[in-house]
Length: 343
Image 1 (cartoon, rainbow, N blue to C red):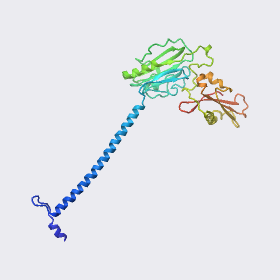
Image 2 (image 1 turned 90 degrees about the vertical axis):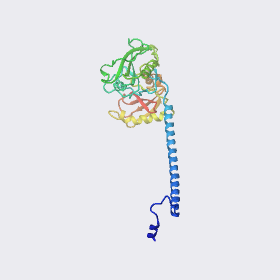
Image 3 (image 1 turned 135 degrees about the vertical axis):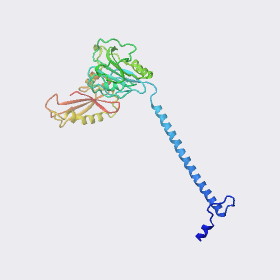
Image 4 (image 1 turned 45 degrees about the horizontal axis):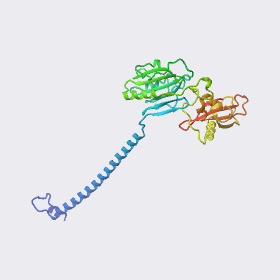
């Protein structure tokens, strides 16, 4: 009976009396439950510890891999279009387009810095956004070249680092940056140098900036009578800013596709009737009309990597508007760039 079991079960066991059979059974059941729970908890702890160790190992491996892929020494960059080479220290990056696109003479041939490299917004001749990005502890270097040699002083050795701000009206106001502007001649060419250093740049940063300046080497400009098919420095602003790469085996098909895609924008407006047009593509090194333009504009390096798309518009009466020529070169990122529309 329930009442009898309740009355015969002691509420509290007396430690001085021997345990009853029921108490012994309870203790055995409790011990077994305890061991089962302890074993489960131990397994869970071991599994969790394994996941933690594996996660730490993977994170350490990723961190080690990132360190390995980062450059540990300056890398030499060679620009065969603009005829110069320079060392790029770790942590520095080079602009792949002109930061002063409205500037035709001089032409910007190099922009190198530790901060964001953005196109100038308020000043046509100075990349004031990139200069301001050198604050408070970074650096920025820009080189521009004149189309004709002038009476500039020979290049000083070493090139100076800025000690005060000399950026003129385009210098960023209130920015913690010092600017040096310098004109000099080297290898028969005339350059304008801009160096910006953050006012809190440490000795290591200043050393890197000095490395960049001292590593600058320029190809020699030949006298005008000896130019012939040689490169002229600087090339016109329309020439590719980045040295083009090899066009590849599919160049003809790629050039035709780009030309067709750009036809409406470049020739589909105004008095040109593009109905029934024809289109051909040839390397600028071939014996075709206008091929010599690439060499005369940008020199042999660009000409050897340029393709020419030739349009004919038979329904356009004007002889000067009856054809179109697009000069294209492949950028390092694999995209084709129309660097000149001759007609």
